[in-house]
Length: 312
Image (tube, rainbow, N blue to C red; front, side):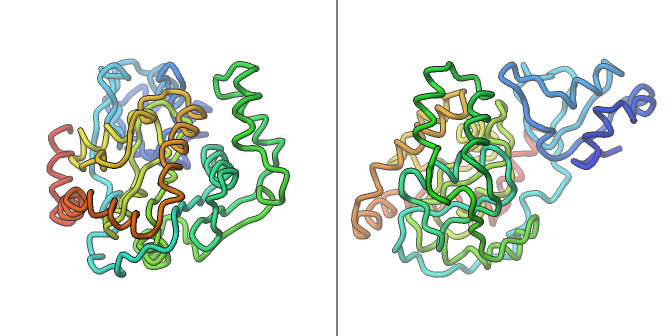
């Protein structure tokens, strides 16, 4: 039996206890509500509290120390197959530094869009924010993200803006979940931007969960870094077989556990490219072209599925 995101509340409210207590296995999909700093997940804990012997099949590869005896990876959903039929993209022609697409209003996307704006990189032609929020909300969230009082005061400077940015929605044809259609809405923005900051689902979680979002850059032959969970970039390299762009990007930020500190470090890393010329961006792009072509072919040849199967 498979339970999707709409069942989370029902599972946490014990509505499926009878099913779990009599089952040998079940499958759950989506991000599961995320993992806390101790790599604990409320949904998995609720299921295991009913039946500690059940095997739970999940969409993402969890480290063996994370529910290792009770979880198994499965890859039966077409999560990464949205773009298999998309193989012609616009010409790479940079005229913008950064693009980022932020759909649903998870706190990590609010943090990402806020800091992009605070750094001066949020160009509404190339960046979206399909939600509004207040400075007060951002301040409140910082108090729940494992920071000391002094750190909250420090890091709030990177997110709090007295303009009307937070209250404004910036959107361009976003269709939630319809990635096969969205790629055509976003292809020009991707191919004209030097770097795409992937806004991964629930970047405040502490275990990597890889969605289709980074593939927008793979299929348009673009450079990307992700605001995601710690070790996310190492994860797509090890378990999916994609290459990182480590000739030009420094991925030390990827190892930082705290989501706020990781995001600030990511922004500091890419900021050094922001004032370069378009010719410089083109030269840097060419330095990574072999890896870009490798990733493009790795996806469309479907070899990434073969790599994933090794971990089922």
